[in-house]
Length: 513
Image (cartoon, rainbow, N blue to C red; front, side, top):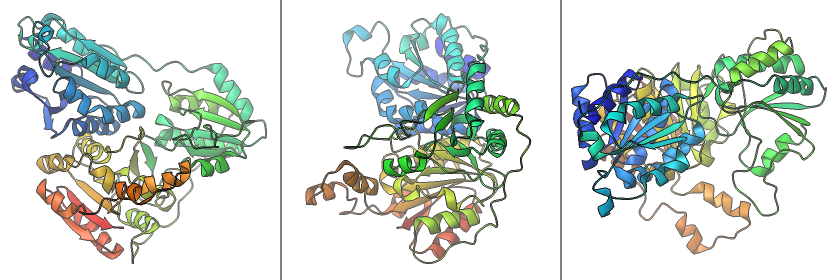
């Protein structure tokens, strides 16, 4: 058995049965080994940032890691933006990165680079496997690292001779470590703050925004009068009927400071203390009041659900029914607007759907209009590196086994970063509906000019304009094998959405906004 075969067999034995790939010459023995071992699903991405984004979306829904196959250091570099997003989302991924043969590396061939150096900023675990006999052991350790709570990026660098040399040994799966234990003192301190009578915010992130976490949080809020809110960017939030009508931390610094100014205690559950996305002249980095006390009930590497359960027990908070969000709205009509699109999504969204949101500035208010939709999962861009939406939606559809409708709320400028994901959706016949929000500009940056106090002139505005020529998303989607249509009214959009939900494969709706 060569090293590549032992690698594939070890991945399968460790529960990794999906590989998102864009391979090259250095990885050919690994690719060949995929045919020699039954059980590995291989999904091709046309660009590495699509590959890494798909692995992120897969983890969020399947709750187990996939592996990626990337071609040498430059291939890894192409995928770094979505690995940054995955690290921020705390998604478990095993990267397999091909590299020069150990004895060829000193000759400094064109693709030679510091692969480990590229991997470290986005990886919690990095190792180069230099002997075929140790490759199985290293692969098992990589999977263990990726599965460590709440999820981590692990990168295994694979020199080509380690892959093709004989002597491979299949390794057994390694036990996954338990989450970092909860701190009883932190639970008591949080309970004391909640009993103080002062205004308290409980800020939820990570698995605390799951349906189970929300149930415990609501008991705490009802028993103490605390207010609940979620972090601005959550990797995955349980939403819709039967879930809480939570709102996110505002993105805009002034709005965030206004929302938090009344609180004297902030209890963090899987969340960091609220800070601005960017620095702005004359404004603080932190968004909570100086006089507010922060209480860390659970750090991100601790189990937020278990922490909320323990806090509810200390407070003796009784069971509390989740409030009804009211009737499901009707689909909107007339000219498109953010509120009308959110209303239409709530009206038509299938049960147990997955919403992948890279709507950027257009969708900041979507939450308040979608509480009455059927129960669904909402996936956010957590790391801020745009170009995650289409790949994450693709990976999420595969993580759900193709059994759940995925609806992408997708800004046009961000979509242009990774539109190759549409080809994978077509090839895999995935149930993905993309609502492409075509406003022909980087609209968020127009607002950021005001935020930083700069005055844009004609040259600056030209750099934010996606016209001349405009992007024709119907033709772009068709070119990647995905059927598409354009909508200029909400009636047209609603009709196309309903049609797409009855299809087996992907569909793009170019909504002119």
